[in-house]
Amino acid sequence: MTSSELWTRATADRYDAEESEMSSAAVLGPTLAFLTELAGDGRALEFAIGTGRVGVPLRERGVPVAGIELSQHMAAVLRRKIDEDMLPVVIGDMATTVIPGEFTLVYLVYNTITNLLTQAEQVECFRNAARHLTPGGRFVIELGVPPLRFLPPGQVAVPFDVSERHLGFDTFDLVEQILVSHHLTRDGEDGRYRRGNSRHRYAWPAELDLMARIAGLELERRVADWDGAPFTQDSAKHISVWRKPA
Image 1 (spheres, rainbow, N blue to C red):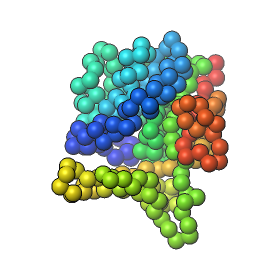
Image 2: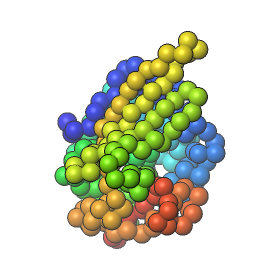
Image 3: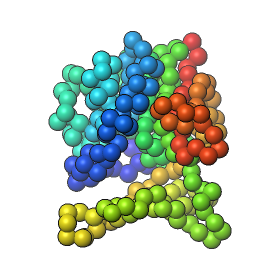
């Protein structure tokens, strides 16, 4: 097992409801179009497929999809949506688990590479992607840019959501490149808040490019969102595409 923290059954059961905005047509439409184009006529493999937020509708678009997922509870939620013969999922970690066959596309969305808490494991994730790709295939990652410019001297926390039902902020260990996402989520109408947190290892785009080179992949494209907006120094996230040489 990698250092990734496991999702519990309770977290998995409420995941889709809490991430309903990320499952909206406005978010998923451009994501699916981007991935469908890269998959072409081949197969797609999703690392950390979770409850199938992206994998299930991508399969419904006609792209053959397989998945790797560390949490059995998350995979169980996915299985309620689609049969194994339509979208096979292997329980395992995305740094070392291997699925038979080759893929034209391997993808990892919504900051999930940060679930691997060491640089060595993140490098192995790139190597595992390369291991699965056909020559000319692509590895895609969606990842936020670390918001360290918002940290004035002496401050270690940055808010990322302040809304009626949720308060979220990240705290940073700048030496180990570890951030902890803290969540206060209001359940029901009684005003009570549920507290949760998760650890992540953040990485810069240039660091990911070096990981890709170690794995034998070449940067092909980097944009700021799934619509293809240019990536700039002010972009909050990036979609990066690395290609396995033919």
